[in-house]
Length: 153
Image (tube, rainbow, N blue to C red; front, side, top):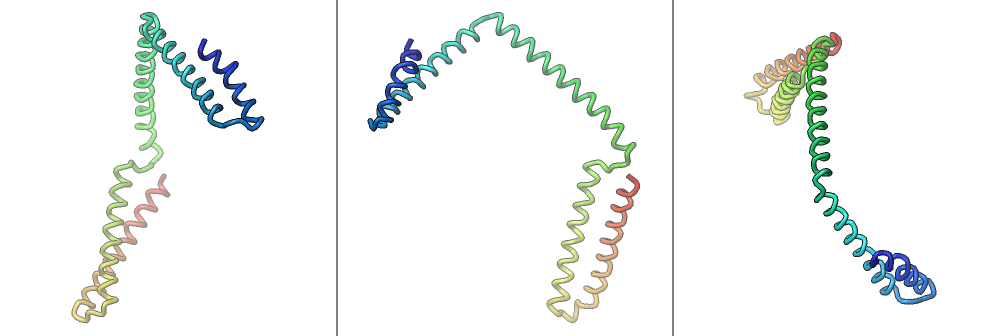
C-alpha cells in the first residue's frame, strides 16, 4: 500500500507542485519514499521466494546442470583445440612466450652494446663491436626462425 500511495499520489503531486514553482525538496522526499517502498517490496518478495523449498531445489538442479554443461564444454574445447593446434602448425603459448623472452634479452644486450659504443670507450670498442655483430646475427636468426614458423603455419 505504501508503494501504491507513494507512486500514484505523492510522487505525481510533488512533481506537479515542482512544475508550478514549488520546492524541489518535497519532490526529492516523495521520490525517496517511493524508492524505499519499492525496496521493501523487493526484499519481501525475494525472502518469500528463497524460503520456498521447491524453488531452492529447482535452483540447485539448474546450477548442477549448468556446471556439468560447463565441464563438458571445457572438455570438448580442450580436445578439439588440443588436436587442432599442432595440425595447423601454430606455436603453443609457452613457445611464443619463450621466443618473446629471448627477444627481450637480445634487445637488452643490443642496447647495452650500443651504449658502450656510443660512450666511446676505446678499450672495449673492439669487443663491443664483435659482441654487437654476434647479437645482431642471433637476433636475425631468431627472427628468421619465427618467420619460418609462421610460413609453415
